[in-house]
Image (cartoon, rainbow, N blue to C red; front, side, top):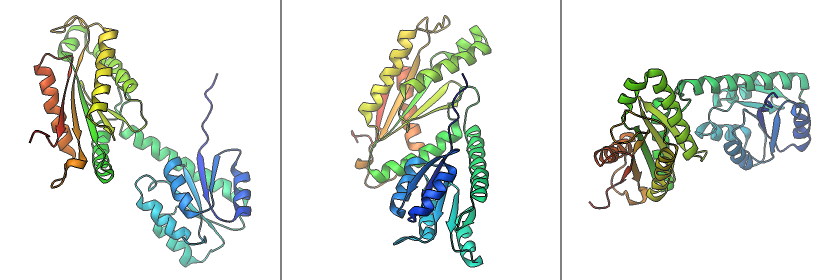
Length: 313
């Protein structure tokens, strides 16, 4: 049975009910259409839905379409989403203003269905292709996890976000124990299979949509956990260790066990305790690396954790 094709999401933001109804009916067969009749609701829905396209009216009460477009382009979550203005205004100056704000196209009212469908199809396809290219550029080709580039970008964003919200940010650095001896003993093909096996366990353990599991390089992996304190991070680390100890994936060349194990370093930044300094993207990584070293030094197949700033200081 062939998988069901997911329809692109299109968000219409327009206070003209009749216009919205006509556009929605014209697009309903090929798209999942969502509607907002106020700019405030439109901004919230755009952030929540992450549509492939926004159809935006220019003339609305309180907040104009131009101002809402500016807000959408200033928001990190909605900045890349293409916006088409749908309006009765068709002067050169007004269209120029829309393009300068970041709109990709204009459709004038009354809307011609053939023009509407053609332009919506063009811009949703272009956006989907852009997302696919960006995903490939940020994906580790062997495991399918986020790569180091995506990891670094996410760390920067999460530090800003969690500091602004005054919530904890945690990081797990996971290293496969005795992986060199695994590669030497079983061969690099089996080594690749091992890396894929590890990646699946990590993905299964970090299930929230906001959790980012990455392959950092070689046999090292990272999991970024936003809004997660030390207790929550330790719980996930313990679950990961339990998975390896239960599955007992064969590793005859390991120094301490006859099955595959990992060591985990945990670091948590408590933003509510930070008053005079701001961590950079390396702070949490260095802290987790230090904890990982402790886990390795203390016998492997275990986790160690640190909090930054250190509560003992």
